[in-house]
Amino acid sequence: MSWEALVPPELPDFDKLWNYGNPEATEAMFRSLLPCAEMAGNEDYCMQLYTQIARTYGLRGDFDKANEILDEVEAKLTEESVVPRIRYLLERGRTHNSQGEAEPACALFLQAWELACRAGEDYHAIDAAHMLAISCPSCEQLEWNAKAMAIAEESLDPRARKWLGALYNNSGMTHLDAERYKDALKCFEKGLEFRRDHGGKKSKRIAKWCVAHTLRRMGEIDKALRMQRELEMAWSDDGKDRDGFVFEEIAECLLAQGDEAGAREYFQKTLPLLQEIRWLKQTETARLERIEKLAQG
Image 1 (cartoon, rainbow, N blue to C red):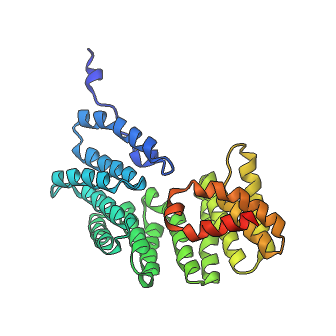
Image 2 (image 1 turned 45 degrees about the vertical axis):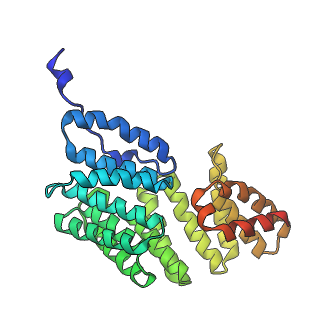
Image 3 (image 1 turned 30 degrees about the vertical axis):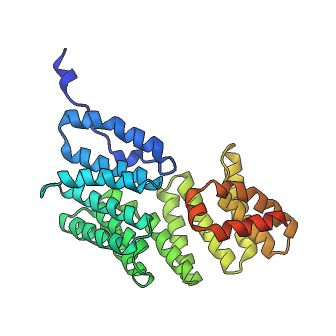
């Protein structure tokens, strides 16, 4: 055997391998990296990877398994394990937050924020701040989003700057929930502009959907419908992709215009697609019931 065969291969950036829509496949991919990481003797990498494997279980709603894996990571942490500890705190916090346990989640995200800031880990500091904006009381959300954006805009780390699209979106959602539509629209338009330069096809479409959704909420139905029709065409051009959220918005626009038959047709298209989404079934039962009723006419 040559000496080259004994040299561990370079370990990939596993953050780039995430497929949030398919946590099962993501787990399999991450587990396939573990032998190489163990061969390389890179304990920090292994611990970080296990925190992400735990996250795949959290996304599937298997919180016991997620916590079991995180318990194993916690037992291995040392004073020198700075980034693994930050990731551990983030994923433990996300597990609590996904179970509706906001208070312990916020405490963990705050610890992650403080540690990441001290360590100069901009990417993880932004992650912590954005999770605080999601889990903390609404009166604190914009403040945490602003802190995250300030770091992202000033950071020299390209990974940190890529957070800006999500942060503009999160701020827009906070304004939208408070019915501050003009402020929401400004944030979503910034997000769309950012995604045009830095986003993939899907992220650009989501950003455009947010702008159109806000316009509908503001009563600009014709403009909103035109944008959603453009998104419908874009999905159609892909051949196999359909987006239930686009169909839902088209239905809502048609309903606002008084086209009940057209709206019913699109609510019928919407229903089976949105019923497949786990988090919607868990948290938006009234919304799905309304769509089902409107689909029946």
